[in-house]
Image 1 (tube, rainbow, N blue to C red):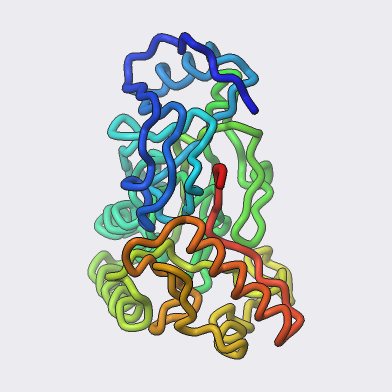
Image 2 (image 1 turned 90 degrees about the vertical axis):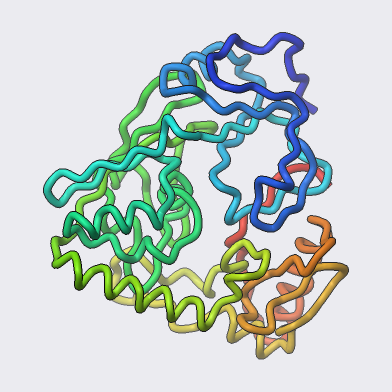
Length: 309
C-alpha cells in the first residue's frame, strides 16, 4: 500500500483530502480519493507533479463519464482539470482545445467556425478523455484528426506528443505513466456551418432514440469485439457489435442489486438507483462470463474501473 505524505506540496488551486468521488461520476458510485487536486493552471499542475513524492500515484480524472470508482475509493491523488483548462480556439481548420473542454462544446464551436469535428458532438466527456481513449463514432476517431497533444508528465515536465507517439489503437492510446493531458490540437475538414450543425442535430436525435441518455450510465460498457477499428488497416472494421453478443447471451435487462444492463441498449450498464460499484462491476463480469459461454468471445471493458473494493 502506498504511504501518502503528511505534508502535500503547496498549491494555488484546490487540494482536498478524502474527497468523495461518487457525485463526480456519471454512475454515481465509488469511495473517496485520498486527495483531490484541481490545479489553477498549467504551472500549478507542473509544480505540484514535480514536488509530489514520486512514490505517490496520481490518477487524472475527466468528468467521470466513462468511469467506475470502486467502493473502497482510490489510494492516490486524483487530478481533475477545471476552468483554466477548458479553452477552445479555432484557427483556420485547426482547433486547439483544453483537456477539460467538453467534447460537445468543441464540436459546436468548431462547427460555428466551419470546421467539421461533428463526431465529437455525441460523445460524452471531455477532450482529455477523448484523446486518452481515442474516442470515436460514425466512423471517425480522434486518431483521424489529432495533430498533437500536450501533457504534463509525472516529474512536472511539459511534453508535446504527436499522433504517432500516442500510438492510437481501438479505444486506446499510449501515455507516459502518470501523465496528465492538458491540451489537444486537431485538424479537420472545412464545411458549411449550417450543414455541420444540421448533421450534428441528426446524430443527436439518432443517439437519443437508441441509447438510454436519461439514465445513469457510463456510455458503452464493452468494446465491440475483437481488434478491428481505427488503425486504418484494410480489415479494420467492427461489424460485430457488443450489444449483439450480449443479446445473444440473453443478458439484455439482466440485473444485480441496483445495476442493470439497459433494456434500451444492452451494452449500457445502468445504475437504476442505489447500485454500488460492486453491483455494477459484478454484473459486467456476469455478462462477460455469459458471452464467453455462449459465443466464445472475450468482451473487453470500455468503462475504466479503478480503486479498491
